[in-house]
Image (cartoon, rainbow, N blue to C red; front, side, top):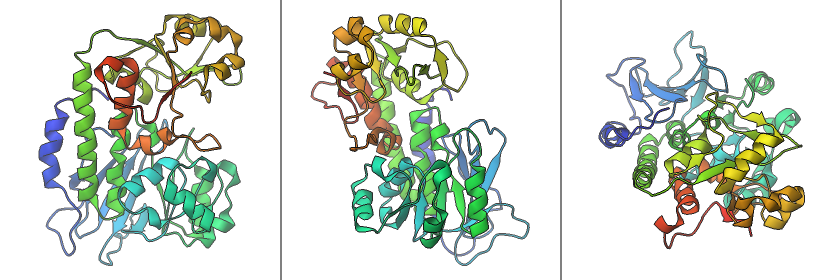
Length: 381
């Protein structure tokens, strides 16, 4: 998705036209657009002939262009029309299960974290309310991937389960949920290639939780702050070169040009050293090329789980000789980590694109962010 400076003006004007769906009848026609995202490519909200709405999930999992999943968000006792071939969810659900930590951040931002009764991967969750809920037994772990405990999930009486697909459709889980009669909604914030595209998913959650106006206002603030920082970065001097990631099981994967982290680097006034691949998936690079790229880098980000230079060099002694390591230009998104290694960068950072960009600018152009303290990132020492 191309950079859209003009969209900020569009956001400010068009957001005045949207709000929480009102009760009673409506003069709009079925399918009329109620909210068309400005940055996200993954959803849209359309009207029905009543108070209910339809949340359309576009490309619900990676490489699913053209696939659309529709969610009828029911209000005022309205029922989906005959022949509706989608999911029916009652608005303002009381009990929900989330399969991604980013879902927690969106729901918490809307003041509805108490509705979460089931989660996946509890050791990796940062949200304090959820952590306390797990300790009290008010929030249950339901498992992950092929290890979902459907007996526990079914016992939770969830009104809706928020799921996602990684390499494709999460067919095993969706089929089982249909068998159990539990509504589910695909959330594909992880497929967005821009930070604000991820953040805008808060509006989709706002539609289901019956507070679209509040969600739009929240997103509007994030977008305005993000764009303000991005525009400042256009005038920065210099363009530090940035390397990403480190070997995982002896294979070094780097993202393609059209990816979330690369967009952050560019918007912060940086230059991604591995650019040149227009595909939307990460690719492996040879050890020889990896060290060539690394030797050019002024900053090195996301070196897996490493939090110190000693730990990084312990993984590979060759790293000690690289300029970016000698000059302590290595940073990781591990400042807010759980004991098991979960990072709030991937949780609340999915929503707070403005804070993530501020961190990135501090890393790449520290002289431009005097007095600002890193939030999600930390410098390896």
